[in-house]
Length: 304
Image 1 (cartoon, rainbow, N blue to C red):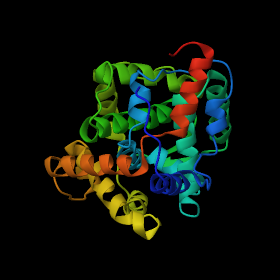
Image 2 (cartoon, rainbow, N blue to C red; image 1 turned 45 degrees about the vertical axis):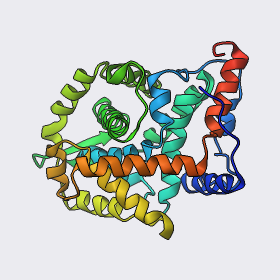
Image 3 (tube, rainbow, N blue to C red; image 1 turned 180 degrees about the horizontal axis):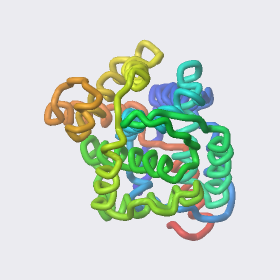
């Protein structure tokens, strides 16, 4: 990894606003920076491995929207969001919680990863209820149910993978198979030990869930909120593009369920890729999280 150029004053200001939007922090550093920086141990991934490359890229902005849309198609995960989430009252707070888990798990030391998994597992113990299946059957659920964990994982993994493949200029080391195999390690502390290990297995698992997906009035309500979340005015045009790019990257079967029409992928791909590159240039190449993680890895002696 090359040394980044020092940020200009404008880039620092823009970076500070970007971090505040995603994490609520006002000082330009996310609140979980210390969880990544501290300790004298390695983590799950190194800077030249697929999950690090994918999750450090701005294409995750598209992948995150895509993952939420996909997860809402399953009535079990939808029920968990609607019945137990504060997404309407505190949307950015919920976003920050998800980003925290992703960031600490990708870049943090093993101890922080375990602690973060413990936090998520404690949250899951409070999430339970009932939902109606695609066939109309009432079914009890818990957030820690293996099937629901698996669906959330594959929807997340497929979304970040496809967003990167379509909207990033960086190659994935080892390709899609390596990303799927390595990212499967991230969910073991959450109690999921049967995640796909290849892209083919990922696609097969998604196919197995297809018959369970449904769009109800509740689903449409979540879709409408995702289409127009309460974001700052200046960010809305960017979000609308990323939302369209997320849908365009989905298979036709998911697009049919969501029922929205947008410009085709061949049109959105160069526009979205170009905008994400401009955003990176505007903010600068410095990354407090990556810098802190690399400094820790060097201190441990596993990275030069």
